Length: 139
Image 1 (cartoon, rainbow, N blue to C red):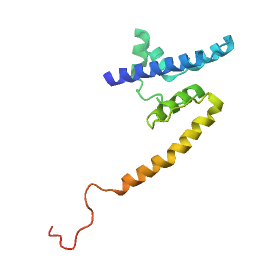
Image 2: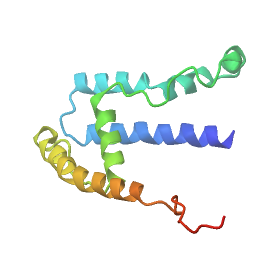
Image 3: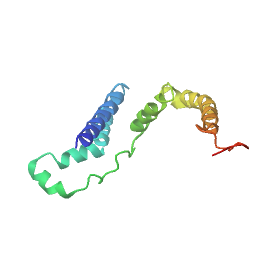
Image 4: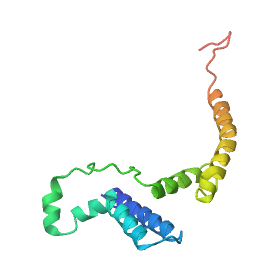
């Protein structure tokens, strides 16, 4: 149960990060803010929280499976950009996707990928143990 609660908290933090990033773009008009709120309110974790907000709803929705919604569904570009940047940090690729429609970021990925791929190929060629028997192998 603790893992589930930690996962839900992580998803709420992720929604807050999307909200903060969108509001920092300084293009917030009432229409954009309403659209942002609609997108964030449709996020599965908020729908999940609404299902269990009152005691009567907890009883009604207690039969539902924990897997009613797909947790990694990306349904807007802000969430996609944040997930791409988070995945790129693991490979030490830093950049801003908002800048020049992501061309400089994709260039960095294009430059970094061949060397990373080559390292992975080299690593896969070495084995921990010798797999070939010697001519005078006694085992």
